[in-house]
Image 1 (cartoon, one colour):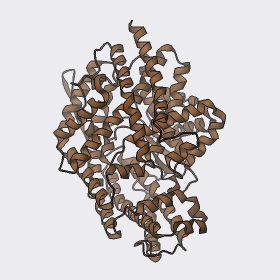
Image 2 (tube, helix red, strand yellow):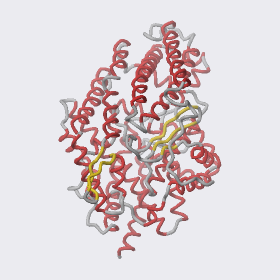
Image 3 (spheres, rainbow, N blue to C red):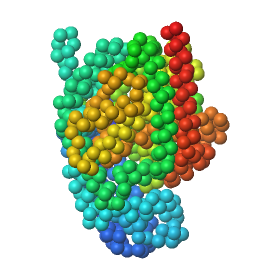
Length: 596
C-alpha cells in the first residue's frame, strides 16, 4: 500500500457533518431523551435510591444502561475531536460544556446502579439471568464499590459539583497548556510558538537547539505556575476528601481497585522497577558517551542517535507499520491500513492542539488517534502504540459498554505489544545504523515508562501526603518533582539540569489520582506476553485476540493466568525487565565499540 506524504487530519464528517449540523443536534437531543428514559426506568424500579431488592427488571435496566452509554461515547468522542485539535474553538467548547451535564447524569446513573447491585442477592441474580452472568465480573466489582459509596444524596451532589470542581480544573489545565505560546529568539527576531511545538525541540540532533527549547520552556511554565498549581491542589484536594468520605484508606487504594489489580501486584512491579534503575542509569550514561557528553541533561534525554532517526517521514512510517503488523497477522495489518485509508489519525502539530498522543473509541469498531508527529523512530513507535489501542477497540467490538469498561493497566496491553512488533522488525532486519538508532529509541521509551513513570508515582505520593495538610505551593511542586527525578534517574542525569516543571507539562496529573503507573504495567505485561508469542506464535494469536476481547471481564491476575503469568510475583516483572536489560547490554557494547 502506498500512503501519500502528508500530515493528515482525522475525518469526523463520516459521523456528523459538523457541530452545527442537523444530524449532530438530533443525536444530541436523542441522547438527552435516552438518559431521561433511563432515569425514569431507575425511578420506577427503585434503582435511583437503592430502594428495591427486586431484580425482575434487571435485564431491561442493564440493556438500557449499555445502550445509553454507547450513544454517549459517540457524541462525547465527536465533541472531544474538536476541542483537542483546537481548544480555541468556542463553539466546540460550548458543546463540551453542555455535554458535561450529560456526563454528570450518566455518572449518577452508574453510581445508582452500583448502589442497587450492592443490596441485591447477587448469587440469586446470576442464577436467574443470562445477561447478569455475561456481566458477572462487572457486577461483582460493583458489589464491592457499593460499599465505598456515600449516601445516594451525597453521591448525587458530588456528581453535580464535579463539573464546577475537579473537572473544571482539569479543563483549565488543558486550555492553558494547549494555548500557551513560548517566546523564542531566532536570527535576532522574537517569535512565538505553541508549547507543543517547542517541546519537540527536545528531539533535535543539535544540542544548542535542545537547550534553547528547554530553557524557554521552563521560563514559560513559570508564567502559568500559579493557576496550574491551583488546579493541581483543587483536584487532589477533592480526591482526598471524597476518598475519606467514601471509606477508602488512601487514594492509591481506590486507584488500584479501579485498575483491576491489587496492592500486592503493584508492590511487586514497583520493587522490580526500583531494582532496574541501576541498569537504566547504565543506558543513560552510555548515551551521554555516545553524544560526547560527560553527563546527560534533562534536555538530552530525547536526543536522536544515528542519522536514520531523521528519515522517518510520516508516509514511510505508515507503510512500515502496515508491513510489520502484517507479519503478525492479516487482521492486524489490514486494521492499520484501514485506519490510514479512512483518516483516523490527526497527525500535525499546530496551535491550539493538545500535546502528546491518545486513541479514543468512536463508534462500533472505529477509533480516532491524535498525535503530534516528528520524523523520528520514536514517533513511529508512538503511532504503533496508538494503533494498538485501536486494535484493542476492534477486538472489543461486539461487547457491551459495561463489558468494554477496562482499566488503564489492561488498556496498555495491545499498544505495548504493537510497539514491540515494529521494534523487533528493525532490530532483526535493519542496517547496523538503523538497529543502533531504533535500539536507542526503544530504550529511551522504556526508560520513560519505567524510570520517569516511577518519578511521577513518587511525586504524586508526595503531593497527596502534603495536600492532606494544606495547599502545596508552585515552588514545593517543583521541589517534589526534582526530588523524584533525582531518586529515580540518579547519576544518569546532571542534577543541575532536571525538569522541575514536569508537573505542569504532564496532563496525567490533572485527573483524580495515579494515572501514570498503569503505563509501566502495560509495558512489562506486554513484554511478558510478547515472550509467550515468541515461544508459540500460531497458538498465541487466537488466544491473544480473545484476551483483548476479555479485558473487561476479569482482573489482571486472572487474565494473566491464561498465559502462565503471575502478576503478584516480583519474578515475573523482573523477567520482563530482563528483556530490557539485554537491550541495555547490547547498547552499551555498541557505544563502547564505536567510542573505543
